[in-house]
Every structure is written in structure tokens, then in C-alpha cells.
Length: 331
Image 1 (cartoon, rainbow, N blue to C red):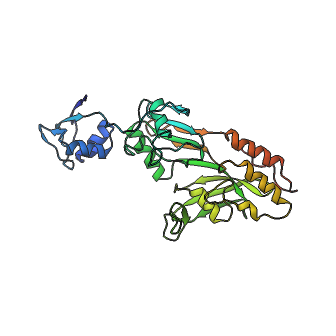
Image 2 (cartoon, rainbow, N blue to C red; image 1 turned 45 degrees about the vertical axis):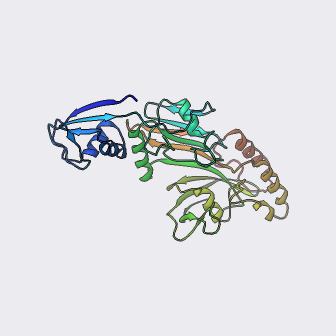
């Protein structure tokens, strides 16, 4: 095991805690710095350090940094669309069907397995099982994700996510027609008390806010842009299902919804359902300030081929007079 030795001499009075000072100076998470201190890998003027002690001018700090522990996650040469990367972060256009990180039952074939092959480094702030992961997408949701390569970038991106400064725009197809063209859904989400594998709008859930705008009205479905203010598990799918307009193709929250459509629209709805091999939900746009340079970063990912084909068919098969076919289309 190769150790990295760093010596710091405090040039100006700092006054803050040692763990905070080293976190900034070494670009390590505070948790990792605290572990180094607990393992007696940090010496202050030759003595054992305390994480909360103040940092004084002229103090000599010696730090011994072991290499990161093996995660037990294997790198895999899997296809991965990396749309941007620098030394601090990467932006990925995730394909539908790929799980973001390993978990029981999904130890291989995940985006993290692919990232370990394609990128030189990944942040450890999120834990050994989720290196680099700042935010997630459901397995069958396609689109843009930002990944942290350094701890400094991870902390900055996570803070922006907490402050709701990391902007995410999704495109979804929702069954039926929403009552308003533009509106906000503010409804708390938590674990479904009956179906524990699902989420639901419940009174004591965590606050969840989605901003929705109808951009196209099809025969018996709407194409909707959704900007997330919060990022709860399954948030868009749960909010649309709660409104009575579940995402097209959503087997968990909207299965069989099209069967309730009678009249001439019944055949159209069945045809749309047949074409939807997965839920129609795509992370279309991502924007944030670079956590190190401060430069504004903006990315857009077009609909993948499966959803683009559905989109084109639905617009061409719009049988109801007076419905918008191209107004507000994203393409």
C-alpha cells in the first residue's frame, strides 16, 4: 500500500477547526479527514491531533494519506455516453435500462461499473458503493446526470442540489389531458404505507415540488416539461399519478390506465401503450455553475430513438381537431 505524505505549515492565523481546515487544504471530505485523524494519520507539531482543535499560525501539520479502499465494485467496459468531462466532473447521458449504482441484486452492469472503466477518478463523498454519484435517475429513465470526479466537486454540486441551484428539466408523456397548461405540484412524497416498494403522496412525506408545463396535446395524452425543485424518489411519476395522469408506459404507477378510455380514443390509447416499451420519461436538460471554476454549464440531450419514435407517431396520429400538434415542441 503506497502512502501519500503531506506537510502543511499554517502561515496565517486560521482559528477554525482542524478537520475543516484540512478538508479545504487537501480537497478531501470532512468525513475522510476525521477518519485520518481517528486513525492517528494526522500529527500537529509532532503530537496526535484532535479533530476539533483550533488551527494556529505557525502550526506544522503532517498528514499520511493511504490510497482509497477498494470498493469491491468492478470496472466494466460498458457503453456509456459521456457528453462532457474535465478533471473535476463529467456529464453522462444515461441510457434507459441501466441502473445508476450497485445494490443488492444489481452488483454489475450499472453506470458506476461503467464509470470506473471510462473515468480516471471518482469522488468518494457519496460512499464506497456510490462513487461519484451526486443525483440519480430511475433504471428506465434516460437522460442527463452529473458525476463528481473529485471530492471538492462533489461537495459543491451536492450543496447546489440542496439549495435547488442545480437545474433539471424532464420531458414526460402523461395519460389524458391535464387541466392547466402550466402549474406547480407541491405534494409531499414518502414510502407507500401499503405497497412498500412504491412511493406515494402522503401527509407526513418529504416536501416535493414539480413545475409542469404542457408543450403538446396529443389525442389522449400530453407531452409535459417538468422542472424539478426537489428530487424525491420517483417524484415526477408519483406526482403525475397523483393527479390522475400517470406517465405513459409506467408499469409501477400507471399500468393499464389506457383501458379506461372508451369511444374512438380507445384504439389510439391501446396503440400508444403498445409502443411504450418503458415509461416515457427523459432527463432533457441539466444546468449548474461549475463547482470549481464557477463557469455556467448547460447541457441538453435529445429524446433517445425509442421515445423519439413514439413522439413522432403520437403527433402524426393526433385525431382530435383543435389539439396542438407542434406548439411548444422541443424539437
